[in-house]
Figure 1 (cartoon, rainbow, N blue to C red):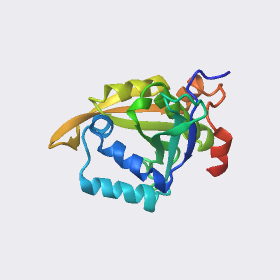
Figure 2 (cartoon, rainbow, N blue to C red):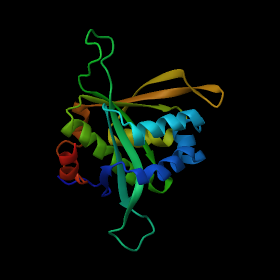
Figure 3 (cartoon, rainbow, N blue to C red):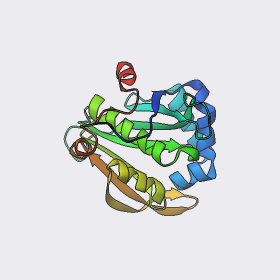
Figure 4 (cartoon, rainbow, N blue to C red):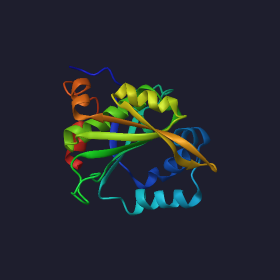
Amino acid sequence: MQRTLSQIRLRPLQPTDKQDYLRWRLDPLIGGVMRGGIPQEAEIQAELQMRFEQPRADEIYLCFEAIQPSTTVPQELIHAGDIRIRKTKDRKSYAFNESHGVWEFGLQCDQHFWGDTELSAIVAMLDVAFMLKGAVRVEDTLWSGNHRSIDVLEKAGFTREGLLRKRLWRNDEWIDEVFLGITEDDYQKLWGHSLPHWNYDEIKRIL
């Protein structure tokens, strides 16, 4: 079965992507609204080091490209956003420092690609998690005022599982976070019987 999703291309992060990364993180609409506020300078520098100098071994961080909305050349792809999954350690178990298939999700996306392209990128990363990495669950937390991103995650199959009150400190105040998750069973029902809409074989060789 063919998916009715926008065509995108995933690729590894490159040094030349640093400018886009900074622009999105510091943008009041993209970084501010999506994450509940603009991060402090120390936080930005720590992120840059982790992303471009010392990547985490427990994280898969990819860029996604899509057709520029106003272009007249259908083949022209541009950097539309970044997306990641990070392996999380087992909680409340005796298997210390081990992980048995739970991954944390994260995304930042240029506002011109919000909506369909963003949804396509999320589903593609779920393919990576469940088809290539054997995930049993993918989860995310978003600040409660980020209604647009919460809606997109729910369209991708995530379930709103709880509210973490006064969980995130941003702009000198405590704000609530919404906890969302999708299990392998959820994924299989929605996307498991359809063909990937992105460069699956290429990324499979890389990972």
